[in-house]
Amino acid sequence: MNYFMRKDFAVCFGVLLAMAMAAPVAAIGEVQSIEQIAVDEVEVTRGADELQAVLRPHPDLDVVNTVLVFNNVLSATVVVRCVAYGVNGRPLGKINKVKIPGNGLRFILASDLANGRDFVGSTLCHSEGKIVPAAFIAGRILTDTPAKTTHGWPGTKIRFPTVVTY
Image (cartoon, rainbow, N blue to C red; front, side):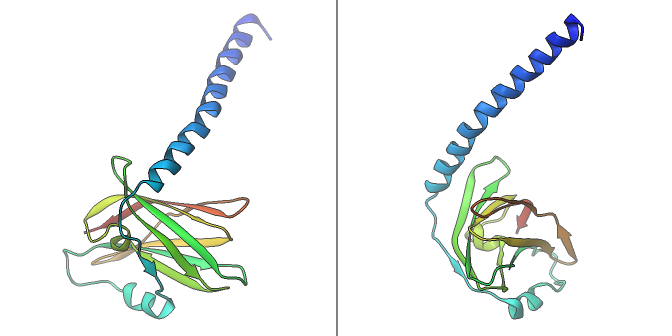
């Protein structure tokens, strides 16, 4: 390895080390901002029967809502907590208790998270069990949207990168 390659490697390593050290600080700031949200907490108990009605195209052009679906793959009840973020990264609303029965399904709507306000943004959810998520944007047409998961200890972190309601 020549001198220039070692120098480039050292610079790259230094940048990566600095980013790794800054990541926990950002995570702590995110947790603090989640706790400071002053919104009404909503408990959601919608199941599969209501989901069938929601996942149909609506003729109204002025209504769009994102459906966030959670499937519990464990035999025990799991609680999911979610926080919605606007396009500027600020928290808009949260839901602290979506109780999903063992091997069951529950869903929330973006309008539940936004407290009736129109918004476009993302949602971050966390559970203490293994959850398989899905997301759909329901309006005049129905389309699926990605849900990113990280399974780890002690649970599942879920990021819905595109959430919209109006």
